[in-house]
View 1 (tube, rainbow, N blue to C red):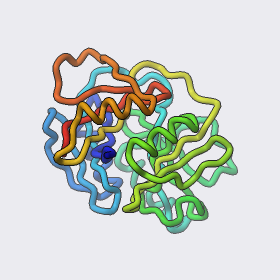
View 2 (view 1 turned 180 degrees about the vertical axis):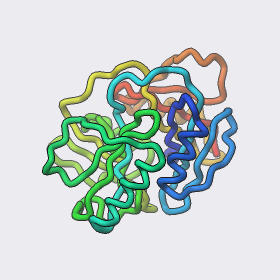
View 3 (view 1 turned 90 degrees about the vertical axis):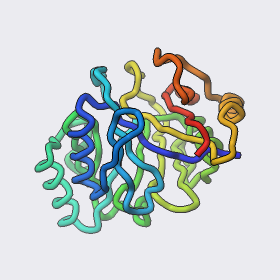
View 4 (view 1 turned 90 degrees about the horizontal axis):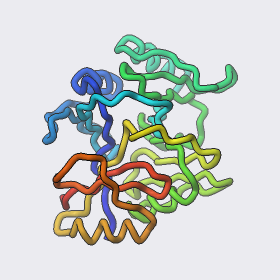
Amino acid sequence: MTCHLVALCFDAHDPLRLARFWAGILGWETADDLHGGIALLPSDDTGFRIRFLPSQEQKAGQNPMHFDLTSRSLEDQQQTVARALELGARHIDIGQSPEDDHVVLADPEGNEFCVIGPDNKFLADCGFIGALSCDGSQAVGYFWSEALGWPLVWDQDQETAIRSPHGGPKITWGGPPLMPKAGKNRLHLDIAPPAGGDQRAEVERLVSLGAKRIDIGRGEVGWVVMADPDGHEFCVLTPR
């Protein structure tokens, strides 16, 4: 048995504002979240929702995961960038060179994302969200492949990528050198066993694959907080 990916979660000082920004970029509808946040529901083959959860923690350093948004043409790329800037994004410099064909932006709370040029062959068969691009080791790519039951679609030079058999975005890990971890990540994945599954058994399976249970001070909750082999947090929800 494997888990399925339920959501990518953003910690947000203003969940409604951040949800409206990303709804404007992606064209997804908003919905109330069960835990006091806001959710966006996919209108394409993405396969998971995006959740924006209230948090007062400050952003520390570059996020270890970000979206890569695709473009059909240079004009399309420019239009996406212009729309993002109108909605409250800004250009940022994370060391990219002028020759790079992607544009690096940050959303209104500083979360990085890239608008990829139209000539990117790796994401050519993906939708608008081409990838969830992560800082991470080859080992963590193998871990998530086993955790979700998604096959590896790239495994070369310690860089890995997986993708759902049903399509949607790729999840990629760039290999070493890894960024130093600066406190709790502002983005994390929510996964869950399928309906009729066993949350406790799934947690034990993930531990056997290299994850560990962690305590982030939330007390008694219905989900289990864990860290993958690289130390990045994720949550195991009840079966659904």
